[in-house]
Image (cartoon, rainbow, N blue to C red):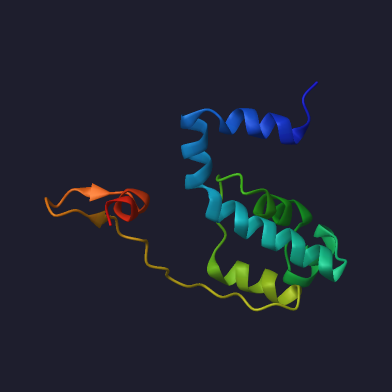
Length: 115
């Protein structure tokens, strides 16, 4: 039987799985922040739900990232407040590909090798 770590490594060896995983990495990072913040406060989902005026199952859905429901900014702000945190939303510019003399996109490692 494979461990979680082994199974993950095997799955990420598949290019299609890896591409999909990378597309969702920001969402996974946010969900991880939610769980760490709640654990740091020593609160259960039910306790957070009570603080923000919802149900434990609604908090569980929000923390699961199931994709079926996207919580509003207001709900995320309430969640953060219940954990003694502040919600911060930022826009981060994506890295643009480096272009060669012919105008073709090249990887940064290729560009470094050309120099």
